[in-house]
Length: 182
Image 1 (tube, one colour):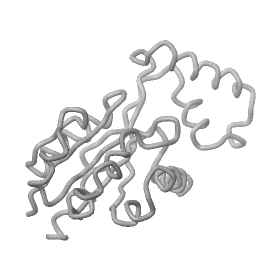
Image 2 (image 1 turned 120 degrees about the horizontal axis):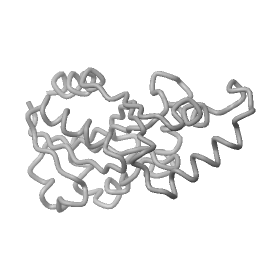
Image 3 (image 1 turned 45 degrees about the vertical axis):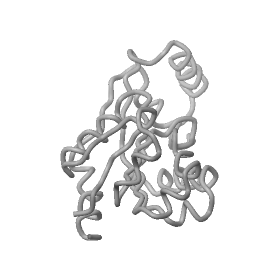
Image 4 (image 1 turned 90 degrees about the vertical axis):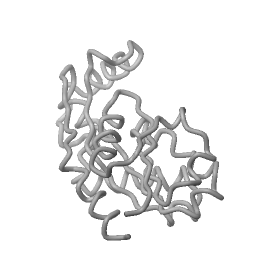
């Protein structure tokens, strides 16, 4: 198997959880994006980047375009992690659209993308984030849920709850992809 590394950025812990599960499944190192130097990536054949969906975009994904000489020579896989259900076509389209805006066309076309279902724990959110969710909740409390976009629906359904959709099984397609592409 290719020499692989998982790097991630996590805001609330769900992306980190997936990154470490993936590291265990692939028997490879896992690093927080902020704690690894770009030159350390040179020794790997496959770089997996995991980033949370935050305000529509993938946090930290700019690392791919910041070091194009490294990433264009490697097999690069990106997994996103967010509250919206990645089995829904509108979730995938929404995440992909944001990634197309965040990356150069060349980078976007060169990566393999997987979308994962994360979670939310309102009790652990910073006050500012809880207030934003409270505002969204109050704005839509009387709305017909079918009239809301996918993100608003998820916020309404998860509001005030601890929701964790992470699972090791969700990572199997990534593992299979890496193993078949030896």
